Length: 202
Image 1 (cartoon, rainbow, N blue to C red):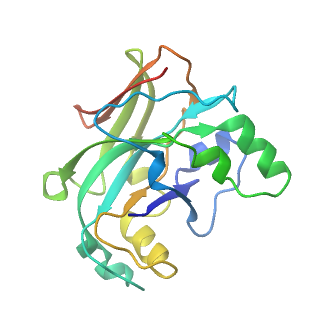
Image 2 (image 1 turned 90 degrees about the vertical axis):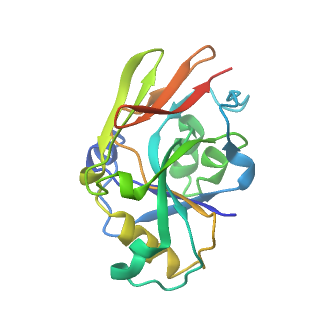
């Protein structure tokens, strides 16, 4: 199983971090050891003092595909869930300044909590609303219609470089509002009004 992530897929998030809006999807990956399932707690790493939450819609690939044309990409997933891309922001900024890859800041153990999934037939794929609460207060809110690159565009783009297999996950980018988490925080991810993910920070 592979985990792909899309950076800078919401223009307001790109702006809040001082990044340019990309012409093509910005792709990075996380190892399977980054996954946290079934409400497992997230333990803050000792190499960062500034870990940020980034809530994202997650596509689960449902069949094998390579070099998929965009108009057919919708046939390669039938479920959408919600996840968090935890980012060691201080480490990421240091790596970026040196022109180095982000993996250490993005792919560390436990950095990809994953919630439940919903069948795409239950959703309007162009207008999925999702959000994140921290300690009961709303911190991030986004809608699929704000995405720079659609689900289909992302799948098609990634498949030009990597063969997609059943069960592969694609974290599709985060809206504005990312922020620091601390020990004791409780994060809750929603699709529409349905609670899909719970993660306690330790």
